[in-house]
Image 1 (tube, helix red, strand yellow):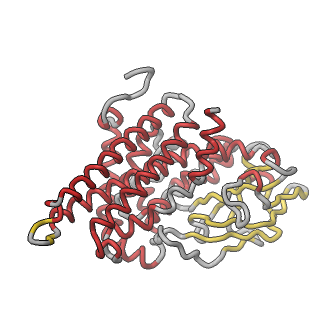
Image 2 (cartoon, rainbow, N blue to C red; image 1 turned 120 degrees about the horizontal axis):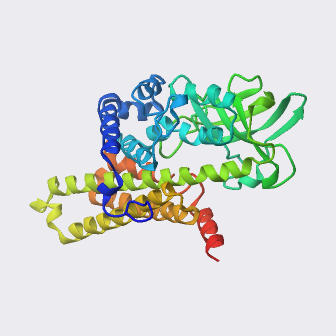
Image 3 (tube, rainbow, N blue to C red; image 1 turned 180 degrees about the vertical axis):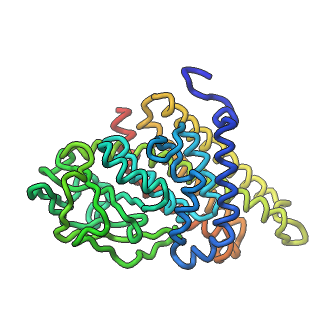
Length: 386
């Protein structure tokens, strides 16, 4: 232990309490999710009741204050939960169930006591679904260039514009939304809580994606939505900083998702390589496959350790903006290679629906795009290095 940072080996990162939470989530996934995940993938979503079931055993409240129904803890409680949710084998399910973890932190960090009671507690209880609305059809990763406007009108804002690629876009009851309340650029952006029953708020049909099939993804439209000014999160025109702070936790989460995606692909590859017979022997008997698996495993170990190290430093209060961007990029590069190689090991079967590696290969592709693309991460790293 150095400077309050856990240092050696995975077990040094996870305490008995962390592992208790991990076991509880694993039991939930094994009982409530895995038997149905293939069906939910094909259906393009999972039942809303799963949020309540997850809330009842504390999954949704992990990392949140007790006064709002949560269970506070360090980053490794979130790591344990995130890894086990990914063990569902569906990145879409994990993203859909966990959308509150990108929607609620700005409220927790900058909201009023009344906002926290209204908009955090019911979500943690599984009674409401929260989503984050940042990306716009013409903006992509250019957060400072958002066009959705919120014009002051007495004690309300009049909101016009749209958001896209919103996880839980169709089913969300509330949207933590980036809007333009001032001039151009980062200094004119605010965060506004918009409820889905607001007149003028509408959603698209489900967006059809390459991967993450089990997540509800949609565009959201605002046509003269009147939103009370009491729903402003933090100060007007200061929302950009809240968005940037929020991105760090999201990038850590995406690195964790990438590492577990790669690890599951490796596990499936080892199992298949031991069972699959060609030319009279298991394909694990061929050196090219054994070495491929060794390379996959080595990359995963390096990426996982790097990600855990960053998480530990964040817990210790050490600035990790550069490092978490590096960890996300590295984890996604590793997952790109490992899922590709896993499909190659499976051959034609790796291209067939019904095989886990096929889903992992598809789901993996979004990870280097979401939360800021690889290219944006490199720009952030460059600015902090040079």
